[in-house]
Image (cartoon, rainbow, N blue to C red; front, side):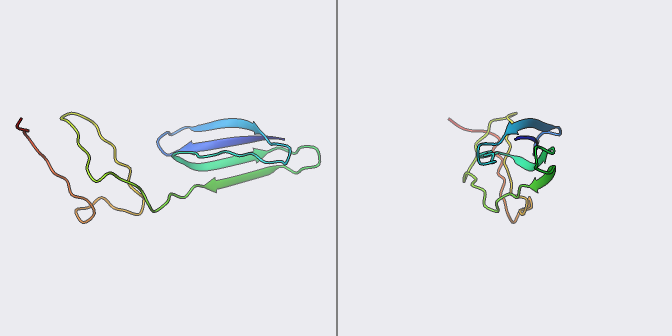
Length: 103
């Protein structure tokens, strides 16, 4: 059975759409969907099966593995993922600035 999927990515404003086919057991395995925050599945009436419209919000894990230090160079962009339940504050993070490196 064909199922229309719509995926919302956390860093892209538009959604990605794809039509996938179920296997012989009527299942579709999506696998790991990095940075996907919402999935919508629509199946139109097919043979004797009724139409279905389902939505799932993907919850982030509270655990995020971050490196203990990040070294960047001047004018270099760095992006550090933060769990939604952690606020960017002095209590949670320490920022250092080094203006000159000897050597």
